[in-house]
Image 1 (spheres, helix red, strand yellow):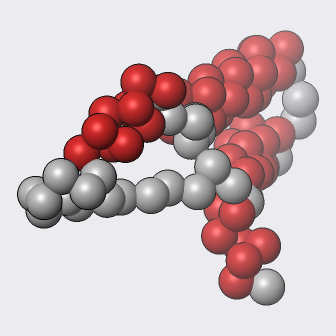
Image 2 (tube, rainbow, N blue to C red):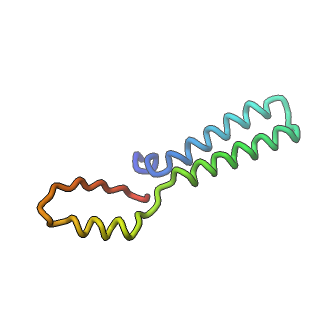
Image 3 (cartoon, rainbow, N blue to C red):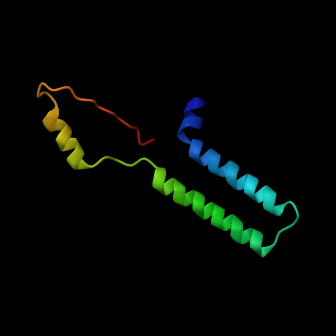
Length: 83
């Protein structure tokens, strides 16, 4: 269960934000203005996800790492999972 929450935490947070926004806007009825606001909030959340999503590293970074390994100098290695 914790893996599911960890992998999809941004999706859950976006759904919560969109749901709370929809509840606040639509509790007194639907208007075209409410629909536009909901679409803008959804587009903003998608944009945020596109900016913060993990991406694969560059090939040049991997080549630089290979050059430093085994040279006798300390090396700090940080790995990130794209999933």
